Length: 248
Image 1: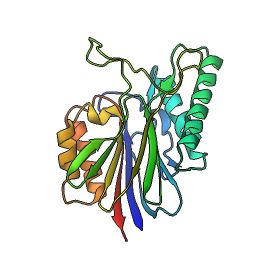
Image 2 (image 1 turned 90 degrees about the vertical axis):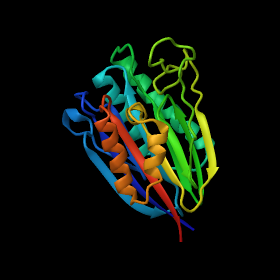
Image 3 (image 1 turned 90 degrees about the horizontal axis):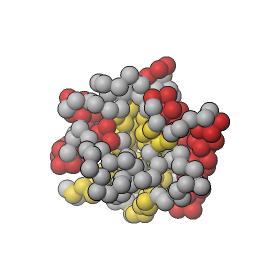
C-alpha cells in the first residue's frame, strides 16, 4: 500500500499585485485572501490512497480580476466534485469548469477570461490526470524527472512567450477542449510536482530535478523550489504542489 505526503503553496510573487493562481490539495481549495488571491498560503497533509484524492493547479488569464476569478472558479468546481481516477469523469469535470467560466465571461461582457489547469486524481497506486495550457506535471522517479503534461502553445511563435492553444474558458463554438492525458502507475519513492509557469519560467528543469533529488523532507524541498524561484526574480504568480509517495 502507498501513502501520500503533500505540500501545496501559492504566492503572487515579487512583481504582481494580485495572485491569479489557485490550487486544490486533496480536495481542499485554498481560499482567496483579500486582493492577494491566496498570496502566501500553504497547505500540507498526508493520506492513504484507499479513496481517490484530487490535486490541481490553475493559472488565471485575461487581466488581474478576470484571471483570479477564472482560476478560483475552476478550483471551486474541482473541490465540489467527487473525485474518480477515470478519464471520462475528468473530461466531464473539464467541461463543467469550462462552461462555468464561459458563462461568467458572457454574463459580464468580458473579452478574455480563462485559466490553465494541471490536475490529477490518485487512487490505489494509480494516477489519472490531464492538463490544458502550460501549467505542468512532473514525475521524479529513481533519479529521473519526466514531464508528464504537454504544453499547449502555438508553434513557431516569434515572441518569448507563445500564446496558449488550449485553456479553460474557450467557448465550444470557437475551439473544442482537448486535454493532454496522463495515466500511470505509482511507486514507492515517487515524487509528483504540479506547478504553474511562475515556477518553471524562473527555474530550468535541471534545477528543479536537482532540488527534488535532495535528501530532505517534502516540505523543505517545496520551500526550496519556491524560494529559488523568488530569488530568480519571482516575476509571476507562483503555485506548486509536491507529492511524495511511500510504501507501507
